[in-house]
Amino acid sequence: MSSNNQTTSQQEPIGQPVKLAQGILNADIFSHFSPAINVQKFPEGELTTEQVELFNSPDNKARFGIYSESAYSYTFTEPFGKNEFMHFVAGSVTLTSSDGTVTQINTGDSIMLPASWMGTWETQGYTKIYMSSAV
Image (cartoon, rainbow, N blue to C red):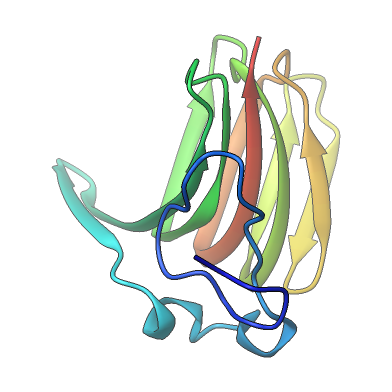
């Protein structure tokens, strides 16, 4: 269990605060955890992701965690499907909305991506802290 001055290790019991200490909010954040690593192979190349889920509500509608992705580009032709707050601790992402609006997100930036968003997500790699809620 975490106290107010400690960093949580993995998913905390429901009802307990989950804290990420300021000193670990950087590109080395995964050195403090044991992330799940996933490698997917596509004709265009490989996508590697790392994830630590720190909180998942009993109804699976709210999630909080850390996520990292290698270089990747994907076009969402259907809505994103969840409301997600993201704070980027490393890397960058370029979002090109379906109406052509371009949003550049860099290390230290935070965004709120609505469930209705559609467009292209492009990155050379990033690490984010996220809080998502199902719609």
